[in-house]
Length: 236
Image 1: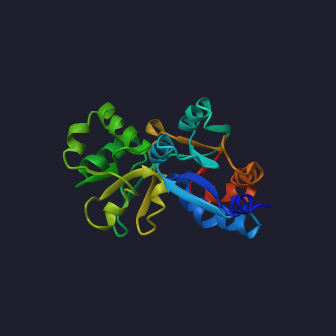
Image 2: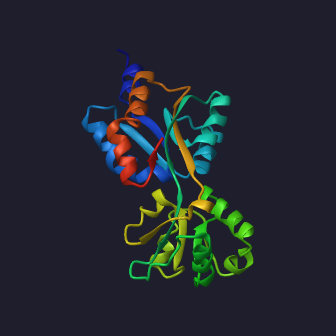
Image 3: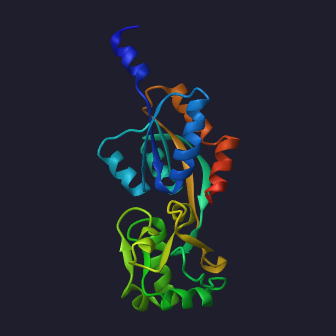
Protein backbone atom coordinates (compact mmCIF):
# COMPACT_ATOMS: atom_id res chain seq x y z
CA UNK A 1 0.00 0.00 0.00
CA UNK A 2 1.43 3.40 -0.96
CA UNK A 3 1.57 6.29 1.50
CA UNK A 4 -1.37 8.07 -0.12
CA UNK A 5 -3.61 5.02 0.18
CA UNK A 6 -2.48 4.53 3.78
CA UNK A 7 -3.37 8.11 4.67
CA UNK A 8 -6.79 7.67 3.06
CA UNK A 9 -7.41 4.54 5.13
CA UNK A 10 -6.46 6.42 8.32
CA UNK A 11 -8.76 9.35 7.63
CA UNK A 12 -11.90 9.43 9.84
CA UNK A 13 -15.31 9.39 8.27
CA UNK A 14 -17.07 12.76 8.24
CA UNK A 15 -20.58 12.90 9.66
CA UNK A 16 -22.72 16.00 9.28
CA UNK A 17 -25.48 15.75 11.87
CA UNK A 18 -28.41 18.05 12.62
CA UNK A 19 -28.20 19.65 16.05
CA UNK A 20 -31.56 18.19 17.03
CA UNK A 21 -30.01 14.70 16.91
CA UNK A 22 -26.83 15.68 18.74
CA UNK A 23 -27.43 14.27 22.20
CA UNK A 24 -28.47 10.83 20.98
CA UNK A 25 -25.72 10.61 18.35
CA UNK A 26 -22.85 12.17 20.29
CA UNK A 27 -23.49 10.67 23.71
CA UNK A 28 -24.79 7.21 22.85
CA UNK A 29 -24.70 6.16 19.21
CA UNK A 30 -21.17 7.15 18.17
CA UNK A 31 -19.51 5.75 21.33
CA UNK A 32 -21.35 2.45 20.76
CA UNK A 33 -20.32 2.46 17.11
CA UNK A 34 -16.66 2.97 17.96
CA UNK A 35 -16.81 0.34 20.72
CA UNK A 36 -18.21 -2.09 18.15
CA UNK A 37 -15.12 -1.57 16.00
CA UNK A 38 -16.41 1.15 13.70
CA UNK A 39 -14.18 3.52 11.77
CA UNK A 40 -13.25 6.74 13.62
CA UNK A 41 -15.72 9.53 12.95
CA UNK A 42 -15.28 13.29 12.76
CA UNK A 43 -18.74 14.63 13.55
CA UNK A 44 -20.06 18.13 12.91
CA UNK A 45 -23.23 19.03 14.86
CA UNK A 46 -25.03 22.11 13.62
CA UNK A 47 -28.54 23.09 12.56
CA UNK A 48 -29.30 21.69 9.12
CA UNK A 49 -29.24 25.11 7.48
CA UNK A 50 -25.68 25.66 8.71
CA UNK A 51 -24.63 22.24 7.43
CA UNK A 52 -26.10 23.21 4.07
CA UNK A 53 -23.95 26.34 4.11
CA UNK A 54 -20.86 24.17 4.61
CA UNK A 55 -21.92 22.02 1.67
CA UNK A 56 -22.54 25.07 -0.51
CA UNK A 57 -18.95 26.09 0.31
CA UNK A 58 -17.66 22.75 -0.97
CA UNK A 59 -17.70 20.43 2.06
CA UNK A 60 -18.70 16.85 1.27
CA UNK A 61 -19.66 14.61 4.22
CA UNK A 62 -19.41 10.84 4.01
CA UNK A 63 -22.71 10.55 5.90
CA UNK A 64 -25.33 13.16 6.70
CA UNK A 65 -28.28 13.18 9.08
CA UNK A 66 -30.54 16.17 8.65
CA UNK A 67 -33.99 17.50 7.87
CA UNK A 68 -35.58 15.22 5.31
CA UNK A 69 -36.56 17.89 2.81
CA UNK A 70 -33.07 19.38 2.76
CA UNK A 71 -31.50 15.99 2.16
CA UNK A 72 -33.90 15.37 -0.72
CA UNK A 73 -32.62 18.52 -2.41
CA UNK A 74 -29.03 17.32 -1.98
CA UNK A 75 -29.91 13.95 -3.48
CA UNK A 76 -31.34 15.73 -6.53
CA UNK A 77 -28.04 17.63 -6.78
CA UNK A 78 -26.12 14.31 -6.61
CA UNK A 79 -24.32 15.37 -3.44
CA UNK A 80 -26.04 12.69 -1.33
CA UNK A 81 -27.53 9.32 -2.17
CA UNK A 82 -29.86 6.68 -0.69
CA UNK A 83 -31.84 8.78 1.85
CA UNK A 84 -33.67 6.93 4.64
CA UNK A 85 -36.06 8.33 7.27
CA UNK A 86 -34.64 7.93 10.78
CA UNK A 87 -36.58 9.99 13.35
CA UNK A 88 -38.82 12.95 13.95
CA UNK A 89 -39.37 15.40 16.77
CA UNK A 90 -42.13 17.78 17.75
CA UNK A 91 -41.94 21.25 19.25
CA UNK A 92 -42.11 21.65 23.00
CA UNK A 93 -42.17 24.16 25.83
CA UNK A 94 -39.73 24.55 28.72
CA UNK A 95 -39.51 26.82 31.76
CA UNK A 96 -36.81 27.62 34.34
CA UNK A 97 -35.99 24.82 36.80
CA UNK A 98 -37.91 26.23 39.76
CA UNK A 99 -40.78 27.83 37.88
CA UNK A 100 -44.41 26.94 38.19
CA UNK A 101 -45.41 24.59 35.36
CA UNK A 102 -47.92 26.33 33.07
CA UNK A 103 -50.92 24.61 31.56
CA UNK A 104 -50.41 24.05 27.82
CA UNK A 105 -52.86 21.17 27.42
CA UNK A 106 -55.09 23.10 25.01
CA UNK A 107 -54.53 25.80 22.42
CA UNK A 108 -56.33 28.28 24.64
CA UNK A 109 -54.13 27.39 27.63
CA UNK A 110 -51.02 27.62 25.46
CA UNK A 111 -52.04 31.09 24.27
CA UNK A 112 -52.55 32.19 27.86
CA UNK A 113 -49.12 30.85 28.85
CA UNK A 114 -47.14 32.61 26.10
CA UNK A 115 -49.04 35.89 26.28
CA UNK A 116 -48.60 36.13 30.05
CA UNK A 117 -44.89 35.31 29.93
CA UNK A 118 -42.39 38.06 30.61
CA UNK A 119 -40.44 36.89 27.55
CA UNK A 120 -40.63 33.86 25.26
CA UNK A 121 -37.40 32.52 23.76
CA UNK A 122 -37.45 30.92 20.32
CA UNK A 123 -35.05 30.30 17.45
CA UNK A 124 -34.56 32.89 14.74
CA UNK A 125 -33.81 30.55 11.83
CA UNK A 126 -34.35 26.96 13.00
CA UNK A 127 -37.48 25.05 11.91
CA UNK A 128 -39.13 25.37 15.32
CA UNK A 129 -38.60 29.14 15.44
CA UNK A 130 -39.83 29.69 11.91
CA UNK A 131 -42.92 27.62 12.64
CA UNK A 132 -43.56 29.33 15.99
CA UNK A 133 -43.31 32.80 14.44
CA UNK A 134 -45.92 31.81 11.87
CA UNK A 135 -48.08 30.19 14.55
CA UNK A 136 -48.14 33.43 16.52
CA UNK A 137 -49.49 35.19 13.43
CA UNK A 138 -52.17 32.54 12.92
CA UNK A 139 -53.22 32.73 16.56
CA UNK A 140 -53.43 36.52 16.39
CA UNK A 141 -50.91 37.12 19.18
CA UNK A 142 -47.75 37.90 17.20
CA UNK A 143 -47.50 41.57 18.11
CA UNK A 144 -48.08 40.90 21.80
CA UNK A 145 -45.51 38.08 22.09
CA UNK A 146 -42.83 39.36 19.71
CA UNK A 147 -42.69 42.76 21.43
CA UNK A 148 -40.87 41.18 24.36
CA UNK A 149 -39.52 37.97 22.82
CA UNK A 150 -35.95 36.69 23.18
CA UNK A 151 -34.92 35.52 19.72
CA UNK A 152 -31.95 33.14 19.72
CA UNK A 153 -29.61 33.15 16.71
CA UNK A 154 -28.01 29.75 17.40
CA UNK A 155 -27.99 27.04 20.05
CA UNK A 156 -30.64 25.78 22.47
CA UNK A 157 -33.27 28.38 23.31
CA UNK A 158 -33.61 26.96 26.84
CA UNK A 159 -30.27 28.58 27.76
CA UNK A 160 -32.22 31.84 27.96
CA UNK A 161 -34.23 30.35 30.84
CA UNK A 162 -31.11 29.90 32.92
CA UNK A 163 -29.67 33.39 32.50
CA UNK A 164 -32.96 35.16 33.07
CA UNK A 165 -33.62 36.45 29.58
CA UNK A 166 -36.85 34.47 29.21
CA UNK A 167 -39.32 32.50 31.30
CA UNK A 168 -40.66 30.26 28.52
CA UNK A 169 -38.62 28.59 25.77
CA UNK A 170 -39.99 27.10 22.55
CA UNK A 171 -37.85 24.61 20.67
CA UNK A 172 -37.81 21.13 19.26
CA UNK A 173 -38.14 18.70 22.16
CA UNK A 174 -34.87 17.00 21.25
CA UNK A 175 -33.11 20.36 21.60
CA UNK A 176 -34.80 21.33 24.85
CA UNK A 177 -33.24 18.24 26.46
CA UNK A 178 -29.79 19.65 25.64
CA UNK A 179 -30.31 21.97 28.61
CA UNK A 180 -31.05 19.46 31.39
CA UNK A 181 -31.47 22.16 34.04
CA UNK A 182 -34.58 23.46 32.26
CA UNK A 183 -37.95 21.91 33.06
CA UNK A 184 -39.69 20.56 29.98
CA UNK A 185 -43.42 21.25 30.26
CA UNK A 186 -44.34 19.08 27.29
CA UNK A 187 -45.19 19.24 23.58
CA UNK A 188 -47.36 21.86 21.95
CA UNK A 189 -51.08 21.00 21.89
CA UNK A 190 -51.83 18.46 19.16
CA UNK A 191 -53.92 20.95 17.17
CA UNK A 192 -50.90 23.24 16.66
CA UNK A 193 -48.06 20.72 16.82
CA UNK A 194 -45.48 20.60 14.03
CA UNK A 195 -43.07 17.73 13.48
CA UNK A 196 -39.66 17.88 11.85
CA UNK A 197 -38.61 14.71 10.03
CA UNK A 198 -34.98 13.67 9.84
CA UNK A 199 -33.28 11.28 7.43
CA UNK A 200 -29.79 9.95 6.84
CA UNK A 201 -27.98 9.68 3.53
CA UNK A 202 -24.62 8.67 2.13
CA UNK A 203 -22.27 11.14 0.53
CA UNK A 204 -22.04 10.57 -3.22
CA UNK A 205 -18.31 11.24 -2.95
CA UNK A 206 -17.73 9.12 0.18
CA UNK A 207 -14.08 8.07 0.06
CA UNK A 208 -14.73 4.75 1.80
CA UNK A 209 -18.15 3.50 0.77
CA UNK A 210 -18.21 0.39 2.98
CA UNK A 211 -17.26 2.39 6.08
CA UNK A 212 -19.79 5.13 5.32
CA UNK A 213 -22.51 2.54 4.76
CA UNK A 214 -21.68 0.81 8.05
CA UNK A 215 -21.88 4.12 9.94
CA UNK A 216 -25.18 5.04 8.31
CA UNK A 217 -26.60 1.58 9.07
CA UNK A 218 -25.56 2.00 12.72
CA UNK A 219 -27.60 5.22 12.87
CA UNK A 220 -30.63 3.01 12.19
CA UNK A 221 -29.69 0.15 14.53
CA UNK A 222 -31.95 -0.94 17.42
CA UNK A 223 -29.59 0.72 19.90
CA UNK A 224 -29.72 3.96 17.92
CA UNK A 225 -33.52 3.90 17.80
CA UNK A 226 -33.58 3.46 21.58
CA UNK A 227 -31.25 6.45 21.97
CA UNK A 228 -33.51 8.60 19.82
CA UNK A 229 -36.51 7.64 21.94
CA UNK A 230 -34.66 8.50 25.15
CA UNK A 231 -33.99 11.95 23.70
CA UNK A 232 -37.66 12.54 22.78
CA UNK A 233 -37.18 11.71 19.13
CA UNK A 234 -39.73 9.36 17.61
CA UNK A 235 -38.08 6.69 15.42
CA UNK A 236 -39.30 6.83 11.84
